[in-house]
Image 1 (tube, rainbow over the protein chains, first blue to last red):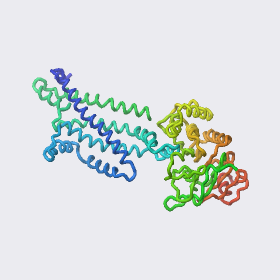
Image 2 (cartoon, each protein chain N blue to C red):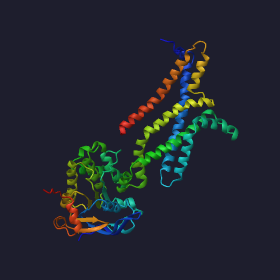
Image 3 (cartoon, rainbow over the protein chains, first blue to last red):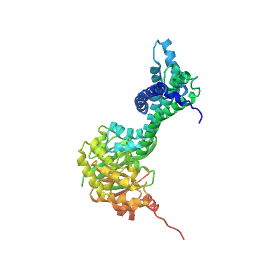
Length: 224
Length: 249
């Protein structure tokens, strides 16, 4: 059995620190996901209406988000705004803003697509029964749209959790940064620590994301 | 003579510049079953969709018990409750159980008491042989079962008139009868109905009056006996012949 340097984890508070780092990553992604889901639903519903200006706003916003690497947005928000506008955003706040901008655009597009994918005749069937337009929307269209939306929305949240590994570059000490610090500090005593620590990080990411994908599968099966 | 439940006067419907219905007038009286037949694409379904204002119209008017129903009219949801519609592909709501599908409009739109509607719904479900399916989801039902649920759902709103839009066209042949029997039962109990169908023997059995729709207008209007044994127009003869098969030997 090669030395994987796992013993480093049990030195001092190392393992706890990794967990704290994981919590920072999760906090950023979950707060961003919550904002994205709420704002995205609003944006998607508005953009789904006929002849809506929000459709153009969403399209332009998506185009920018799709071609712009998240890292550039992070740098722009964290370094750029402090000089240009004198904003003194913390790394974590910058990260949440950038992730929310990204997530809202994607979520908005998912919602718009899901609402649009409910057949027109389902709406007509509800209207023919004499339901009022808001009732048709809330009781017939949205519940069906949400079912189509859940797998993709959860996919977006897991991608957000993974992408938090970038925020170390704007000075946020999240799980990956903690891992690097631990490896650096033990370079002499445990030169093999890199493998064991990164493996631990990998497992932690997996354990954080797995419940989400399981939940998605369960819901899909339940609703089919 | 009983009053007209549905009165269509000089209805004109166009899609862009294509005329689908041209100056069409028609009355359905209380307790009457009127069947519309005609070649596909002649506007039968569009006519039904106009009656519950799923389509806007370009001319004429449609009245339900004297009150006008319009696509852009006020009280549209209220007016639509006077018109029950059963669609070709059932259009049950897939995320709701059978009983929830049925109760939705009476409870949410008509504000009737849930227990009262539920009792009525269960009785109707029993009559169509689906009482034990009340808590099933639509996807667990066969096509014929779904269509019977759709009929119960339309009935529970207590419409003045029921519209059937080729309700067996999407069904496997062995399920057609179970649905048509339900509709014949409704005719026997004096429901006012306007039915579009391609099932000629059903049309003959259920109809008080048959209407042949072709080229955007009513070509022939007669009793089923007359229509099937002595059609007045050349088009009606041709149309009826299209259902007969003969092999020359």
